[in-house]
Length: 631
Image (cartoon, rainbow, N blue to C red; front, side, top):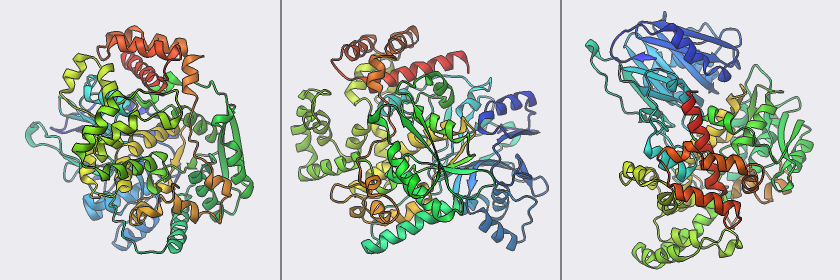
């Protein structure tokens, strides 16, 4: 907590209680530092410098303090550079490297850091608080400025809601975003007045003089990915360099003073990470996999292929296909409504991994960086059609078709043309947001109550996508949607899912394929190297052909999914009905009651598959319950 107006003394018991709410993120040590106008708290998961890396950490004779979550992978090189400049260290931690870098370079210290991080630096000399978040948003940072001038900040939203001065008022715009995307995208939070510091942003708070009200500073970007697509490198040389860059990124993330391993799903990305780890390790790599008793969702045989090839110390646990008893636990962990059902198996694989390791490497980020999603290939096909006709013509032709064509959930894929017709009547950014939506715009307008729609004031989630598209500085169709994913899906869904699920078990997850230097280099490669001949991640697969089985590289992508439709018609049917049509949802004023009833009846009757929206509603109800209980 930081007093932006003066030097009030904060309640030490309150600071300690708020700090301990995040005990799951750091079970090893806890400390709170108090001084006039400031309370810094930290929960530590010890990974590097187990003996002397405690936080809050102070340097410069106690004038500069830091609280930090994450890892700086180039901290040893930075330390050598800072020592050459005359800086003296008393720990071996990467935390102290950040603090000393602040003394040397001020706000530009963040430009030197290679890693995942969220931190706040208090500089007593300047009466400033500096906050920064890593380039890809792997680590979270939430904040809120209260009415009395107190700035509350922390890794999770529950730190802010635990403060008695924060009022929990749900933001209507966040509700619209959630039912469009399944998560609340940065910088918005589900509650008004709370914010997420966006990925690749920094913010400097300066204490106001004379007790005056402090204005909230504008967060400023310090990094962005630029898709130049102009690298003249040959295909063969690009494959070789990509392979070496991935290996180097993996090597940096294997530095730890605690047991380290990897997730091994059997997909291309995690398999490539494990192959690279095996090349750097003199002992068998510890690998963890989750299998499912339903073969339609089970990838464990492919994980076993990679484990056998590299003789890893492989652990597999099979999860029942009806493993859905985490709903209320996830609602507490995520603080906001979060509708990605793969959060359940992600929670389980993190739970299992923590039995064996403290740090795990994952393959997250590979699809976004290297063009792996099926939706990318579909978007490229639609863009070809869009480029053939002017937008007014497409709106006139495909708009009515999209409106009139029935939604054939039960039909073969080639007959499900409604979404395609709708997308062809849109510009690229709008079409991609449309394809990413759990509920299309017209469906959200039907679901959300007239009162909530009045509060929206005409806002639609597509505005967020268009804002990001304006910053993308590319007309390349693939690069544009990759950029949009970096700003929305990767941060709001993937990284949020993995951070909360892993830290629930005090497990640190590191993502080599989200290394910003790797991403910057891949962004120079032409898009034809990423998607070619209908094959996603083309160059990545070619690069790792010498290291991975063909069946792992070129099998159809499965994803980390669960049988939602069956759950919601079977063992979860009564829970779903009781939640969606229960008093919390019917009385909150956000929804059209008739539409809620229709969704439930059509799904249970088998007429339509509404599993995505019903799961979103179920998780929203679980969030409301946690919020009402004040948890």
